Image 1 (tube, helix red, strand yellow):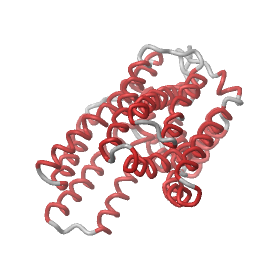
Image 2 (image 1 turned 120 degrees about the vertical axis):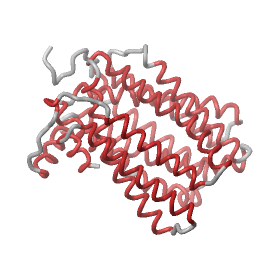
Image 3 (image 1 turned 45 degrees about the vertical axis):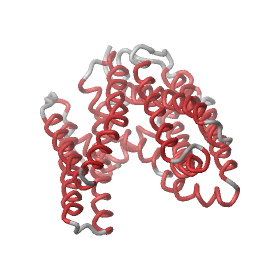
Length: 347
């Protein structure tokens, strides 16, 4: 991720996104061929999956950094909301389409269609034209990495929220993704009930995106953090567990809260970080936010076996609540204002 951030700051960012899409398309196409011919082996799929993850590590910081290069400063929040609306809508429509394709054909065919989607992405992004003045010339890898770190660590609001989400993402991913399906199987009708909960979350994400097309809070990080609190009750609801209808309502609320935070967080970073350092800072953000997720996924099951599923979910909710309330003690989190003109641009 850190390497991807450096190259996304060095090169025209849409070119980095095109290269990443082509690599991911090639990965999926190779996977599809292996599956369709019956020659796929586990080690091959592991290697291909790792290549796809590495490619995403270049795409993500470039896609974050490119937004303020393509829209006016006053349109940043709306642009982020529209981008995330597109992503979240495909969580529903894309999953349904994938299920239909795989059901009518085979998993290999489904992955082949996915490969085509990456190549289509490359063609669309490649049609963008960014001003040549936005190209950042490469200097020294280590020096650029250090420069990005200084930008990251110098802003208390930035690194404290990343630390918060390092813990929050770990416990939420572990409990919801590992223990959620178990609870659904035991109490909520199995896969159908869990699928409805995931769908309600996706609908909430879309609703949150629509809300933020109009809602423009003056203190962006305060609103983002308070919004994220809406995502915690679903953990307590699963711990009981509440009836499915109540859990669907909490999942909808969680989706809204997650999207409020996501859009406003992206907007805050884009308005506060200089364009030539934005992708590197975004890569530190992603690395810190995602780093503990594998630990959370690995630990959730053993912890639940040791102390109980309900207790594990309550503990996860407590960690999320304490970590989220803790960042509100940081003055910059409470006070960071919305800027019509980003801090790195002249008025």
